[in-house]
Image (tube, rainbow, N blue to C red; front, side):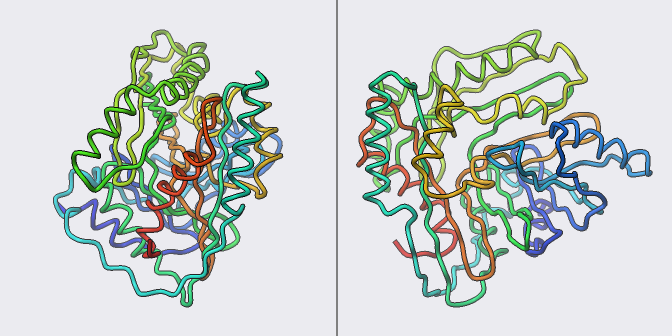
Length: 383
């Protein structure tokens, strides 16, 4: 009892310290034994060869942990830690129910990028292209750039994120050049354990309500929403098509279910399969799925083009993947959402919304505002 929450309490933000909690384990890593190189080789190959070299050098059960960018061929912040401590899931630790430290009273300067009206105009432009038949879906994101009047207490922010949703995927990972990627994602991209693979795409969302009756009404309406069901089906179909070549069997439920976080309701589908080739590792599978229509759109090349034209910033690690893989190929990779990049006294918080031909700018602006709250509440940014 207390092992998982103990690792959470021991996290200290630093260039070589990483924390990752999933529904299967809690991991605290420190130091660097080896870094995954940045070169022209496919990322899964670079990771596999880095792990194989660590085994040859005498490492016992080495693993790679870290973050991969939205453009996973361009950037990855991955390393084999010098030391790793693990425990069971946070959600199974009774001590995780203890209150997190209260947020400091910080004076924040907030700058939206793009401005809300510009984001709405981008959504409207995308809807016109969708109605013209160019593409089926595109995910458009926006950011808030926050500056505090004092250094950020990232361990306390991490505590609040983890204790708010202990059954999710909470992370604080080196993001290069002294920055930290910190967040709490609800979405599993891909896990592999032996020949068993699981994906859990989320697409279609609505903000939670503090009023119980209204909260239940919103959840029920989401399950019947033609716009959200269509958005979700696009994602599930893409993941089915990407996984099918790797799997001997593949089980895809006909209808989604609901997943809740403290801030949002999401439509979710749990896809499970059995690998045909046990040599295929978790990251190779995750890279085959990524980016899914849940974070990019479809068809993917055109959605990427629209994102590049409309979003006035580089996503970097946002909507990439965070996770781990060991030398056997087992691992878990999570979609990098509900997150921020922290650097000194600044935070860059991200949120996105799926745009289809039935979308309206006001709804997508409200959805991204609700998604921001997961991180803003943890950071102590007032409503």
